[in-house]
Image (cartoon, rainbow, N blue to C red):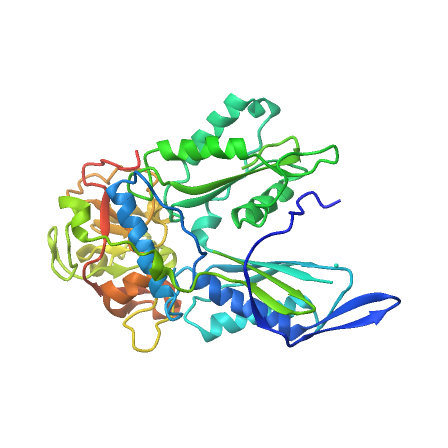
Length: 473
């Protein structure tokens, strides 16, 4: 028995083609024949849709803070730009994770299913403006395929907690979850789709279910278990956890109540409680892919900058910032490692990281006619280990990134250490804020190179100031 088999879904689908499928009879059974080109087409289209359109039907957000409202508006505008199918909604276009279910009366006609699906993913990454990544495949008369484009931020926010049975006490369990959700921070771009799985016959089974639940693949699970150990959704606990997230104060990145958009809690048999989606199918009538929203502009509210009050300050980083007349330089993981090697060898830091703010980011491919590809911030916390050493050497005095920092202590003798978090999603930054991009150093690293960018009206919030005051604490 399959424990996590959901009931029939009302997911809307669009038909991609009626080609590549046919049926035959064998020993009284109808056999569905699927050409490998169908798998390639499905995977290719799914990866494009994940990076561009959004799921329909966003919830209204009553009693939201001004900053919640600002972030929500920026996300909607970003989705509207991405829907033009030129700039992906996020520069981190993720790793393709393909999970397929093939019925016993389905025959696929290709060298192997994994190669056909991988070729579709390859076509998307090489033929569009997505950043390159990698593909993984986890091997009745229908094929169901879930394609989940997972970026580094969300992958880094997946945790497994091996606990004893005592934590299953309702009060203790709620307290445990309350403590853990506060550690998520904002690096994976809230409002979050939070998934919690309690139980599991193994750590792997638990984490696989977390991924499926976060993609809403298990939304139609039953509301209760049974004597066979059937998985079920705990709707009561979902409401309790969602209420906790409303009270944590982080909100949609910069204060408010919408830290999480929704919560999914799935219970599995077992003893250890752990902690952009495209859904496709192939049957005898054709190849289908989940119908996502292609016109997000309909959700844009009438909001003006004046709605945000006097706290909004428009800045252009080609003008004075603190003591620097500059444009930001851009560096992320590998560039930071190379700069640290310079320091460790006694060469010192290059002047550009001393004179300019550093933006933690790496661009997607640049479409024709654009100054930049999607160019949103990457996770701040990954660069924390470099900050003290760099600041002691006169660098990294102003940093722009997303998410919280692991600590708020500036290095000694640094009079102007300000950490700022960019609120603008990747596509809207590329279209409206980034005016010029050029390589400063390490061109061979591709998107991991050191870049110089010219920006204007770049949305940012100061989250850790030069006194060590930390919004997230």
